[in-house]
Length: 314
Image 1 (cartoon, rainbow, N blue to C red):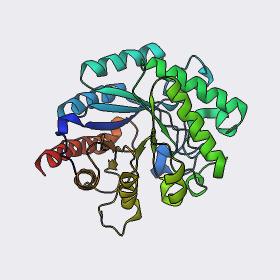
Image 2 (spheres, one colour; image 1 turned 45 degrees about the vertical axis):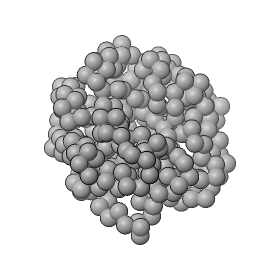
Image 3 (cartoon, rainbow, N blue to C red; image 1 turned 180 degrees about the vertical axis):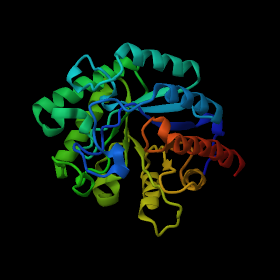
């Protein structure tokens, strides 16, 4: 295997949520899981957002993947905004600030039916002409707001009945329809001169079909949040399969279930993914950008610092 680049030459990304309406379209009645339910107001503390950007800069993050969702007042579809959604001008100002800090902003809109409560009425129009028009409009507008980002994350994870068990209205695409819609979304990104990027978990249940039909032009982020990286773990083997079939990867870790995962992900990828196909890493905390979630965010960011040390020191 060729020599790996230095940590400073890789992507070290952090997923930051502006919008958070992506888990359920109704109140699930569980006070311990308040963030699950979509809300008619924005859940993002701007002072905490600003503080996190400063921490990212200090620990070596160089890319911020912003999950936009309902967090923007889209000119093409203002009906998707909630109370407190940012104007396009406010978002542009934030993106400019990030760039001056050495943080490359990348947009994310999750079009998986398991995470599309942010789409409001259009979440109940999946794969219709109206749906395709809205998706195309949003990708074009967001690409313009981000001044032509080099990547555009489309989500597309967990589109199963099980992952929609909390939804009042559940729908999932299967067979050729899932592929049709994925390729349609990817085409819209490419029209705006960006590169589509998705979560790779579709490979877990559709292994051969995925490797046969998934274009190499789409960046893959397999994700695994456990601590066992042995060959007995199928989620981990997806990294190996993507590598052996020549996909560009941005492996994704998290402190969702333990504090060891991210550094172990870095060490595993360095050993098993060729340098020319390992673009970098993404850390995900899966908590809204709220002061009440400070501890989890700060831990996740410090793990990126540790991951960079593992990379350069291993």
